Amino acid sequence: MKTRGLIDIAEMTTEELDAMMDVALDIVENPAKYAESCKGKKLATLFYEPSTRTRMSFESAMLDLGGSVIGFSDAQSSSVSKGESVADTARTVECFVDVIAMRHPKEGAPLVAQMNVGIPVINAGDGGHNHPTQTLTDLFTIKRELGHLDNLVIGCCGDLKFGRTVHSLVTAMSRYPGVRFVFISPEELRIPEHVRSEVLDAHNIPYVETTSLEDVMPELDILYMTRVQRERFFNEADYLRLRDSYILTPDKLVTAKKEMRILHPLPRVNEISVAVDEDPRAAYFRQVRNGKFIRMALFLKLLGIEVK
Ligand code: NCD
Image (cartoon, rainbow, N blue to C red; front, side, top):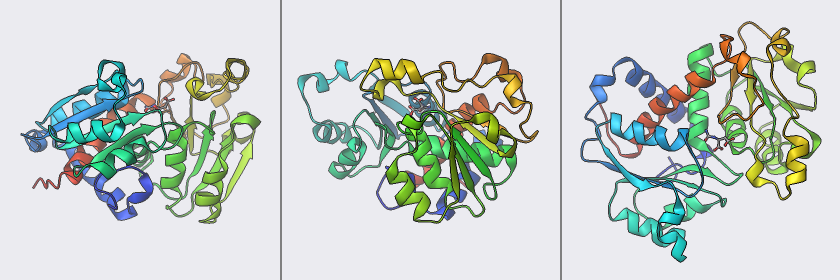
């Protein structure tokens, strides 16, 4: 990997991604083998933004490897409220732990932390930018559900502008042959120009943009639903106008492939009706479970631990 930790999914080679998924699968199948592998190691979770899954997934991953966890989930209870910089907080925490997972509302904050410490820093979501471990989770889920990552039509639906999970997913999936994207969003929430030029156009990846989910449903292998990111809007009226642009209901799935899978990084607000949860194609809670296993594999990689 290029940096000591994981800031952007583009830092990982395809071989590294594939190897990490192999380890994660071995952990699923042989959890006891890994139960003590991080004994004596400590993770700090520094979460400056709300989280349920990501933080608990990181923490469970370290605990299930026999390590321990410290950290904060409310920056106001830390010295951040006194005005401490991300760099100083990271340098302080480095004195106590072996690895840091950081979520921050500002793009680039985990990179700043990484530049100031000698231990691995994992980006657990930075503003509307990137979310590489969600992408590891997404890739591992697609691999487990469909058996392969190449030759897929991936539909990303919802807030493609501010949704950081989509930006990282597109970056990672663009390396697999035969992948094509369908971007479904309101005009105002289209995929950003930097993803278009630096990832899609740069690698000649075919994609189309549409406002209609119904029109494209039959061609999708993956439907990646996202929440409209209220906290990144400048004005509440725009959020209210756009939040219910897409609501996935069982009747909309009638035209979808039998093998299609529905993913969502969660939390959902109301973009997927709960009636869809019963559909075998709904993979989003299995996706949450996969997130812990792939984060376990990531810790082993970043800490240089090999389990025989
Ligand atoms: C996502 C995030 O935080 O970017 N959630 C997650 O990490 N599982 C998606 C979201 O908040 O909508």
